[in-house]
Length: 78
Image 1 (cartoon, one colour):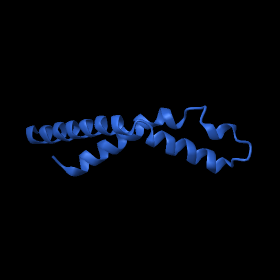
Image 2: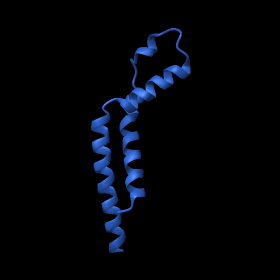
Image 3: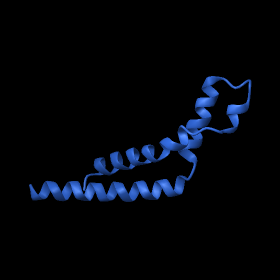
Image 4: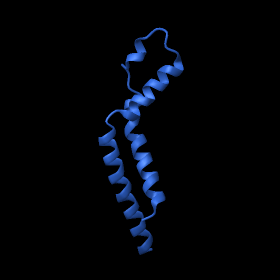
């Protein structure tokens, strides 16, 4: 198992799982008239990454370890 494969899998799965929350609408800052575009983007991104953190992290770690195991197993067979 290579640690590089584990980290790449964990990060990519976590980001993919966070995308729906990042692009969601209805965040409180959407309705503040004085909020700048940067503040709105920052609010959406931070909320998307923090929302359901434990669930996403457990799932991303399990997928990362499984993917790394399968890649290393495939390389040993070849």
